[in-house]
Figure 1 (cartoon, rainbow, N blue to C red):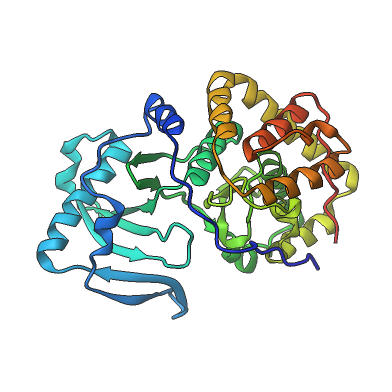
Figure 2 (cartoon, rainbow, N blue to C red; figure 1 turned 45 degrees about the vertical axis):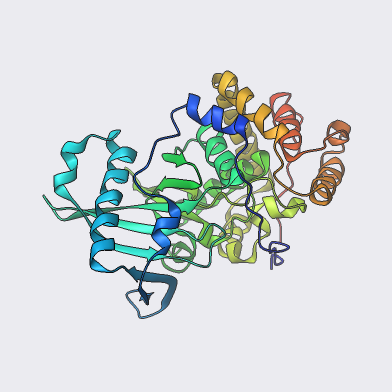
Length: 352
């Protein structure tokens, strides 16, 4: 079995620096919002939100008094319009808030808003969270270095984030692995690539409930893509294994598929393919990536103890002293990316 791999303790939230806010302004990530995260905390009552089987989801549905509810619901529809249509108010008359859920389990204690389009009863979700530099850097690195994009906005102490559609990783493990061998190989391959992306850009804590699997029907079988949905643990922990999804026991069922169906040579090939794609994305977005990494280098995203632990473990892993002079998590991410660009990045074989 893969060993347990838990955070050392609840992560600290870091306030975005002036430099980071200037970056966000330049790239259209700051909007004046009609509502702040603190406004959402004025609820009057909550009830546990259960799933279709009656199991507690760890979310609570919140309720406000009538006057508060009317004002909040209107503001939430405006925010949804900002997120999806750059504030086009024509869509507002067709939108309504169906439900507001609150999760005390996550680091940023998010609110999840369910929006209904009254024209066709179609629904969508978005999230309101406490702002955190780690999460912002994680979202930006996702957009630059991965095949995925997550739309988000910030204002003062508030982060607005779109919902990423897909099957939650834990549900995927229990309901979607009984497929033909051809699809099992595809699943194992995509997990290897996901594992690689997380390790290169140092995104941690990819337990099964922190990512989704996007399943797309194909000519033969289905295509799968693993997508992170939680970016709180971007470059925070000191343990190297924390940035490798392969070492979380919750991911064991997929690890077993890889062990069963893939030779080590195929694993290395998929790792190399993904690193080549990351290098290509880094080069094509060189200006923006450089601005982001320069900010990251100058911002505090972890403790000196965790920075020192991670750089020593990466020195050992890569047998490379490029990390020796790193004093911040941003410098460690930059060193990792330099190794990828120089084709000197070393990955461990997924094993049990």
